[in-house]
Image (cartoon, rainbow, N blue to C red):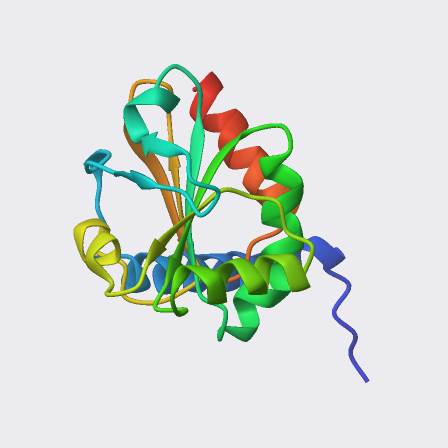
Length: 168
């Protein structure tokens, strides 16, 4: 019986690199049509009645997060978005989730406090090239999109991307 006495990392490192490369390739494929470069125009009235224009967020990194009330992955991620929104600039876009009272009811039922623009017809999503939810755009202080993530991400994953957008 022969045993492979190579160190553990030598056996698993190539496979780990392959898995990471596959994850990055999938993310690139899913977000290939998403907006890049300068953030598209974004303005409207939040569910709380406040006027919003993306230009008012310039000067600090920002997350623009697309979600839907009917999306199970969005539900799993909503607490992370809510936590980040407490101490960072976050604007969320409710995609095709109903009229304003319906979306507000969803927020109230789930005790969520993040700001929301309602995109009933998907017009904002089209402008950003969003083809699925959840999708998050991390915008740097100059208004440039630095990261696009589709799918589940964690509180710390969002915070890391915000930090990178501010410090690199």
